[in-house]
Image (cartoon, rainbow, N blue to C red; front, side, top):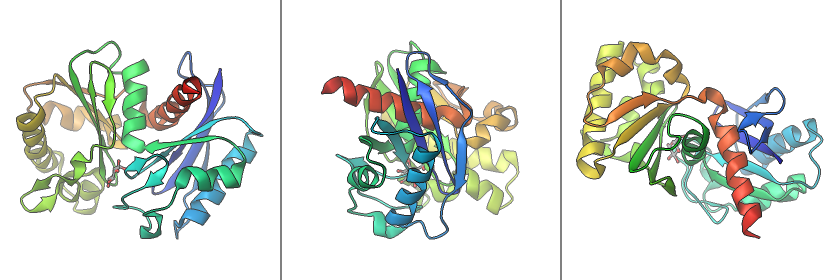
Length: 249
Ligand code: BGC
């Protein structure tokens, strides 16, 4: 079965049909820039553009979003237009695309994909996936089951949100060397370990491509590994989440 997965991010909106049995993209992904003013209407129109690009009519789609999502409604807006708060993103995208929509947090989607087909495949116990990008996204799994909408990137470290000290964006903006950045990440990981005692950390986000520069500098009790699905994790996880919803009905 194929489901269209769409990954809504701060800079780009990317989509591709996914074979949900194999976790492979069926065609090359299609990307458009996220509108500068990323209001609900503007973003939903961009999603519709991707849906039309793939001639996806009346079929299910899965969409990620960088916020807390409960029953389709957006609850937070750390790195997106504040007008999203309170918006039912699922209904809005359904109206614009005429497709049934499953909307979920971006890191949860990436985690779902990694657990099914990537670095977390077959892992029992407690697994924490962290995505290091504009913000810090998180997903936590217990014996493969997701606890949705964890927001560990907002844990307070030295009086600041962890993502304001240790995201990939902060590294670039503050021109931090790998060692300095790793020190900040270690402070965050230490807190995670003290609170959750995970068995495995999976580190994702664009910067995981450069894992050889910083992963060896991270000091955790738990095993720590790079994500495997790279920039496809969101798309694949969104499609998988939508497939679970279909099976429910
Ligand atoms: C948001 C999360 C999101 C993460 C990564 C954070 O600022 O609060 O919901 O998963 O960024 O995009």
